[in-house]
Length: 238
Image (cartoon, rainbow, N blue to C red; front, side, top):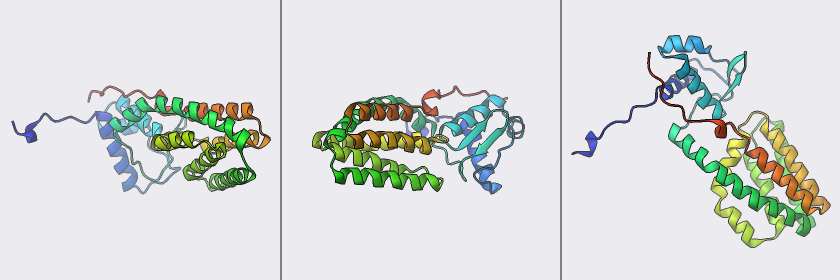
């Protein structure tokens, strides 16, 4: 049989709702901070159940595209609803716990070593990374590049070639976990405060405190809506 005649996969209904919402936002020139219509109105206009609309909103919330204020509606966090495919979300959700385990094991040790081995040059690099992230947070940005710069500076301060190589090998997965975390509302400023705690312990030459501060930070990185999300079963059309 021709490959062109393989059974077709039917998109989940709430994925179609996401596509409709993306087009609605674009057509109406909506921007970050604008409020979407209520779920009841969306369900009526689209001819679907409120469950399908709610599943679509949850998927957008998990990706940091909207904020749901209980009793206050749903608001855009970005100017566009460029949602990723469900399969990609599910794959990231499956991998993320392992990435966090690896980060905890590697980065807590790296922080402890940095507290013992750091030089004045290392401390200057860490302080510069903190200052850059503070500026990014003040501008209202996520600060992903600045976040990466801080962790790279701490890794360099540990002066462990093998641990640095391990970090490089999983850098792509770390970048995904970083982006996932920083998309959470209020997280960039929270991460900056946690970075400062790590830096303070490193500066003080206290390996136990540095490891504890980094462990606390990685635990916070893992507090993301993606890990609470379950790929919902397809809702039936009414």
